[in-house]
Length: 101
Image (cartoon, rainbow, N blue to C red; front, side, top):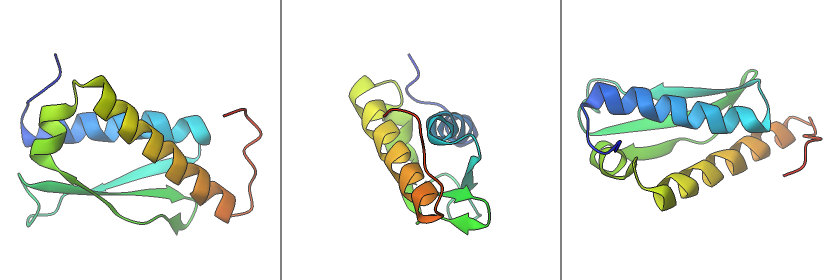
């Protein structure tokens, strides 16, 4: 249903998807998606930001995202990875997540 799409459409979907999962950990976590000219049509680099602190870069291949965004197993894996990275980023700043996981 959601597979395929233009580079711009896939970018928007990826940002929304990652944001929705990162904010489940803490609503203050933001997704910074980089897609400069050298990446255009090829890939995305994503970092989670909590306040002034940035997490490590995560690389996504455009074709991989476009082809798999409609697949539950792939989406579940990316969602879990995003939440895990968000928890690590929040915890590294000394802020506890009191919600059950």
